[in-house]
Image (cartoon, rainbow, N blue to C red):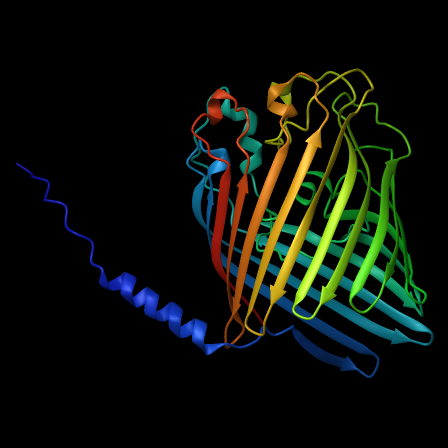
Length: 384
């Protein structure tokens, strides 16, 4: 007859070894390489900037599936080829995200299936892919690029932007695909874009316009942005995605202060059953219907304070988002998000990072009854 041996005490030595290793790494110091430059010919250069990241993620905001605590790995592979010609330069730029997907053995029932698509990650996704022609103060680009709406200076430790302010995580598209025009004379920054209504190929014939007008100096920046559509799609599930915003930054020695504020329009144009939503859903109930051809409004923003040294960086970020009250307690609660981030730089191009996200408690669906309003990510990353 088999018997179960008594539980043995876990040895403490590995924890001691880990602590000593951490102290040794922390003391070694260093700077992170900025990539590799290769000379192809007299007029052509190739820049490669790969970044590799491994982490522990604990997101208690979604506690119901077992996916709230997980180890993970991902990478960012950036590359650009720049060719000079008489009067300007041609740049071919790419940035790929390599993501470790979630395990397929996930708890699914009739209710949880509504959120299953939130845990489908593409193993390889195109973050940027563009052609850009620059001449003097003017540039034109076509492809998938960072949005010209606003500017953010907060460090990022996740391909999914989990550690970002609410408006950067839930409202503003980080990447957009279309045509981009830029003109930067003296201290002016003028940007205009005609883009798809989503990050990738569009399924809607209407095209948003995005514009930003700003001023910049060596240690400061200020800008005003707007995004609006030229029409609405005929599909039943199309959503409003327009906003205007102001962003600013000021640096003083080791300190950098930045802020961003937006007025937002969102929600579904027409009634659409929530249990039939087949795209990743917002855990903050932004993809809901209020009234026929009537958008929901919201106002939000954040303040970010960073202080950095040669081997470290600390970022403190606080933001709020105030949605219009439509009588749905799951949607109507104000979001208050506090972010703390820390980065250590080591010899050999290694970095260790930590980010903690804390929000106010909100009304929850029964499926989220065991959730808590916080998340954190701990990891290491290295660039070549």
